[in-house]
Amino acid sequence: MQGCDPLEFTSIYQRNLEDSEDSDGEGGLGNVNRLIMRPPGHSGKAKRGHLCFDASFETGNLGRVDLINEYEYDLFIRPDTCSPRFRFWFNFTVDNVKQDQRVIFNIVNISKYRNVFNENLTPVVKSSTRPKWQRIPKTDVFYQRSLTHHGHYVLSFAFAFDREDEVFQFSIAAPYSYSKLQAYLSCLESKATHLNESFSRELLGNSIQKRRLDVITIGSKGIPSVKNKKRVVVVLARVHPGESPSSFVCQGLLEFLVSSHPLATLLREHVIFKIVPMLNPDGVFLGNYRSTLMGFDLNRSYHIASSWAHPTLRATIDMIIALDKGRDLQLDFVLDIHAHTTLKGCFIYGNTYEDVYRYERHIVFPKLLANTADDYAHSNAMFNSDVNKIGTARRFFCSTLSNKVNCYTFQVSIYGYHAHGSELCIPYNEESYMRCGRNLGKAFLEYYQIIGAIPVSLTSDVGEKKRRPKTHRSKLTARSWHSDRPKTTRSRFMLHFTDVNYDSETSGEELHHSYRYQLSPTRTPHQDRDDHYLKKLGGGGRIKCSRVGSPPPTTYIVMPEPSLSIIDFNLITRNEIDAAAKRKN
Image 1 (cartoon, rainbow, N blue to C red):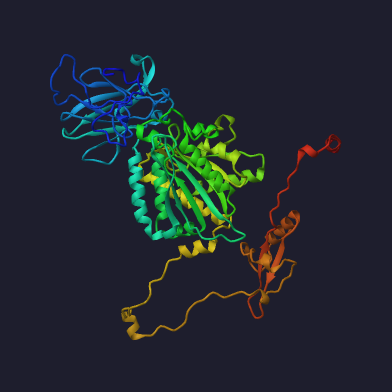
Image 2: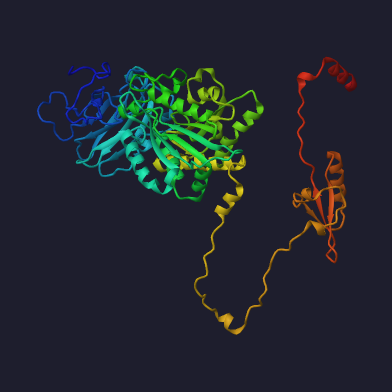
C-alpha cells in the first residue's frame, strides 16, 4: 500500500523494523514516517535544508505534508482512528534543517475552528539540546480563514531554525505520553516507601491493546469508627488523549499527596484517594485527540460502557460503584480532570438538583477552590443537568451514585489564565498545571475541615511554628553587664464568667460571641439608637460587665442571631391576595 493517502487509509498497520514490541506498529496508522520534502525536479540524496518530517512516535500526529514553495508547507493533522471528525492535536518533529532557514507551516485541517487560537494561543516548540517547551511568539502566529484553503480556518506560524544538528519538535501543548506516566508511577512507588500501607499501585484493568489501567490509592487504611466512615475521593484524568494538561494536573495532585508536607499527612490520615491517571492509554499512545483505538469518545460513553468496547471505562465504573456501596466507606467526590480548548483559567462544571439543600452542599467545594486558586475563572463555571451530556462522567455518576456523592468536571485551559484584576493572559506551563493539582488537594482539605471530618485544631497545630530549643548560651549584650532587667513579664488577664454581673437575660454562652462591638462606659445618643434598632429586630440586648474594685463597667452589644424567613407563594390563596389589595386601597 505504498503511496496511499494517509488521510484516506487511517487504519492500515505498517510494521517498521524500529518499532518496539509494545508499539504494535502504530507508527503506520496514518502518521508520516521520516518524510523528506524534496523540491520538484530534485532526485538523489537529500541535501541540508530538505526538511524531514516525522510523527511515527508515541503521541505523534501528522498525517500529510505538502510542499508549497521553498519556504512554505501545508500540514494535515491525522484524524482520530476510526473517528475522522476529530482533528485538533498535532505533535511532530523536523530535522535536516539548514542554519538560519526560515519556513512557514500551515495547519490546514483543524476541525474545531472555535478555540483559544482566537485568543492568541501559540504552539510550543523544543529542540534536542533545549528540552524545555517554549511558546512561539504571537507575532509569528496567525489564525484566520484562508481563501486558498476553501475558506477553512488555517493556523500559520513562521519559524527560523537557528541550529543545524538539532531535531525540533512542535506541538499544540506539552505532550504527556503513556510511557512517561509508567516511568513516573514507578518512580513514585520508590519515593512513597515511607508511607508504608498508605500508598499502593494496582492494576485496575487493561485497554484493548493490553496497556495498563493503573489506579493509585493514597490514604490510611485503618479501621474506621462506628460513627465515622472512612472518606473516599475518586479522581479521573486523561479520558481525552489530546488533553495532556490534565495529566500534569493529576501529577501535581499525586506529588502533593505523597509529600511529607504536614497538610498532606493530615489528608492521608483521614481521607482515601483513588486516582486513575490515564483512562485512555491507547488513544494517548496513538496520538488521538478525543477517541480510543476504536473511535469511541469515552466521555460520551459512560452510560453504554461495555467490557468489550470500553474495557477501561467499565473497570472504572465498577470500582466507583463498589466504593459507593461499601459499608465502611463514604464516597464523597468523583472528580474528572479535563483540559479546555476554548476558555481560559481553571473552573468547575457541576450539577443542579431539585433538592435545594443538596445543591447548596454541592457548590461548597467550587467556592473553596475559587478561594484557593488564583487562576480560577468564576465566569466559566457552570452547573446544569443537560440531558445531552448523560454519557459524561459528571452526569452519569450524578444519576447513578447515592445522594451524598458530589460529581464534578475540573477544567483547565490549554492556553492560560487571567490574573485577578488584570487583562493580561499568563500562559500555563508544566509547573503551573501541577500547581492546579496542589490547589485541588488544599481545597479538599478545607472542605473536610468545614464538614468536621478533619478537626480544625489539627490544622492550626500544623500552622504553628516550632520554636528553636535553647541549646546554647546567648551572647551577653553590653546592656546586660551594667544592669539586670526586672524579672517581670506581661500576660493577658483572664476574664472568668463567675466574676461577671449580668444585667440582661443573655447567657454566658452568648457573651462569648459579643466582643465585636465595644463602646465607651458613658451613655451616648448612639446607644439609644442601638437600643431602638435591637428592639426593632426583636431580640438581643445589652450586657454590663463589672468587677469589684475595677474601672467603670464595659458595655457590649449582643446582636440577635440572623434568621431567614421562607415564604412559599404557592400556599397563598386568592382570598388572601384580594384582602391584601383591599387594605392597600
